Length: 149
Ligand SMILES: Cc1cc2nc3c(=O)[nH]c(=O)nc-3n(C[C@H](O)[C@H](O)[C@H](O)COP(=O)(O)O)c2cc1C
Figure 1 (cartoon, rainbow, N blue to C red):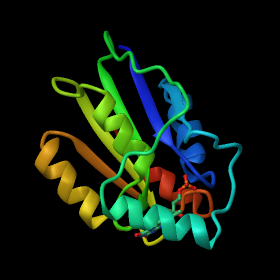
Figure 2: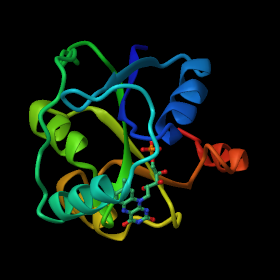
Figure 3: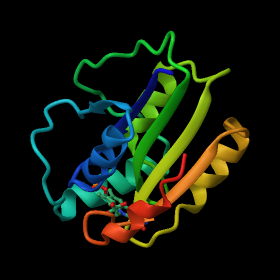
Figure 4: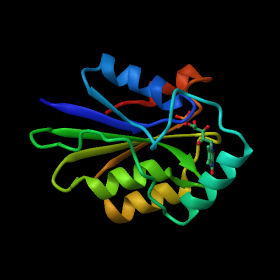
C-alpha cells in the first residue's frame, strides 16, 4: 500500500498533521508557495490578500514539487482554510493532479474548526472522498485524534 499526504502550511498547523501521518506510514510531500520560507505567522497583508484570492478560487504559483501519484493507492490532501475555502496553493495542487479513481481524503485545518465552502466544493467535485476538519491542531493537540483514515 503506497499512500501519500500532500499538504500546504503557512504557520505550522499542517506540519503537525504531517508528523501524525508520517507516523502512520504516509509519505509526506509539503508544497511551498513560490518564495515561501519557513513557518511564519501571517501578518495582516498576507491574511487579507490570501483571503481575497482564495475567495476567487485563485491558484498560487508553487516551488517545484513532485506531482507523480502513479502507483499510489491512497492520497490525502491537507489545506488550511482561507476565507472558508481551500488555500490558493492547494487550488494549484488540485489542478495539477488527476485524483480521479484514487482513494482520497481531505484534511482541513482552520481557526474556527469549520470549512463550509471547502466542504461544499469537495462534495461536488470529489463526492466519494472523506473530509476531516481540525481546529488549530498546533495549539489543540487533541484535534489530531480526529484523524481516522
Ligand atoms: C489567508 C487566511 C485566511 C483564513 N481564513 C480563515 C477562515 O475563513 N476560517 C477559519 O476558521 N480560519 C481561517 N484562517 C485561519 C487558518 O485556517 C488556520 O490558522 C490554519 O490552522 C492555518 O494552518 P497553517 O498553520 O498550516 O497555515 C485563515 C488564515 C489565513 C492565513
